[in-house]
Length: 118
Image (tube, rainbow, N blue to C red; front, side, top):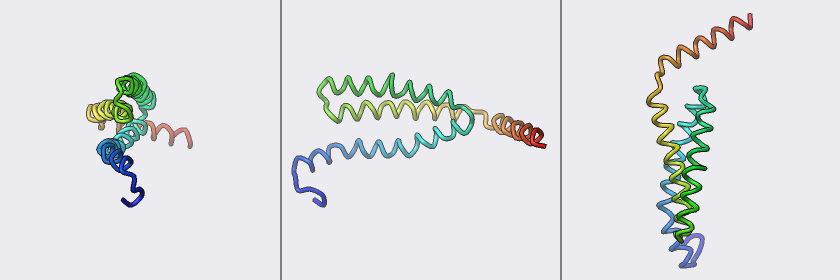
């Protein structure tokens, strides 16, 4: 009871702590995958994945679970599901990438830039 002595607050924090832990875990992985994809030049793809994950999965599911009277747990779970979908899609994209081809593309791009600057 460091911050409060309210039993209802303590119970709610206890119930929501698993969602917080899962959110923290996902938010350690998802930004790295997003950064890899953006750094690889797939900005448009990442934008579509973000929009699809949150506006087609996360938000509708959050609204639906809230409507079913799951309260904050339902809303939070819906939003987490959008992050899960985004993380899974970005993981698949990253794993399917032919990194040798991407490295060659980057080398070609750098060579062209250096030639145009001389």
